[in-house]
Image (cartoon, rainbow, N blue to C red; front, top):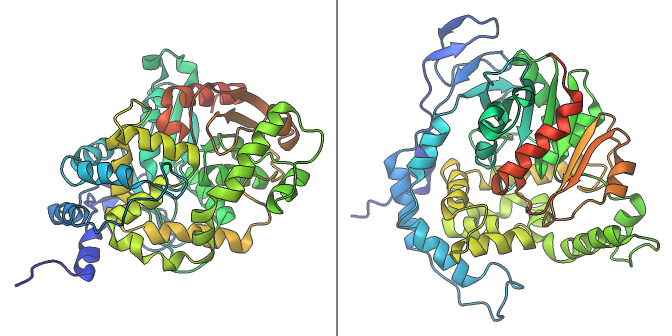
Length: 440
């Protein structure tokens, strides 16, 4: 008799990953007993949260990885046709035999994690308070194909700066939410969870935690969220930090979208940014186009862990090359376990398709492109990493952000700056927000 689980059984098991304490934390500070799924929509209950996936889910993941039906090798000698077969087979070999998800689970559960409902949706977040007085509240937002796992390495440097060679006056209280449809947050069942709505949700979250003033940082989707926060400019927001800024001038953006030549008069630094963006617009947008147009079509990502892994690796050219080098055994800012922890989270939570829908919701309402100038009204700190999708020139940043308070070009780092280069990233966040500090 075939005892293999059906997809319905597997999805049911995945939903049992939460081990929540029976104690709910009410906004007024009182305590009561609340079952994990009993909180009323839009109440202010903050529920403790723990991660615990069944052993059967991990066994099923390994079975699927090891049963992968492989295609033939690419017909070129480089990555121009996509993620290379050799890279994926090295990844699958390690994932199917040696990777230990329980270590990542233990790291997550060592941190204070919570769940709360905002606008009818469960929002998962990590919340670590600093031991230092006057710590500045900071909300950090991940992107796709990321998760809260991207930010784990920056929590201690930001909340406990004296242990990392910095001053107590640089301390932060750190809040790291999972985007709607990502990780442990709820999956929207209706349309409309676009970037402006997420930005408003983050303001509600920070106020619910008791913060009357805060700063915000993010990359990828997180960069879109912080730019939007800067446009909305709620009174609680002091400023934003971005490592994927929206600085591209309108004439440059138009030429890129229409595949026209670069506008005349660009400096050498601006031409470098043009070349990076021109390559991405012509060769790197396939994943984003599919998710923005037809996210529901991506059933294969929910059915094949190796298919999911390949889709996640193929984000942008320079990041992919870095990730591939990791599986070739070369030392990088990430390890095989770092990469597979994040992919495994997507698999176990079954969020490949729900996370992709953010691109669809965004495409319906967005008035500006990812890298376009948005009209941010708040103070802004920009960190330009050399192997990001594009390295924003200072000249563009100064025009895009009239209240630019910090700009720095880093010597190393890809799209996943906080994850891959946590020391540089933490130093940048400290320096970027230092001008905004005052007793909170």
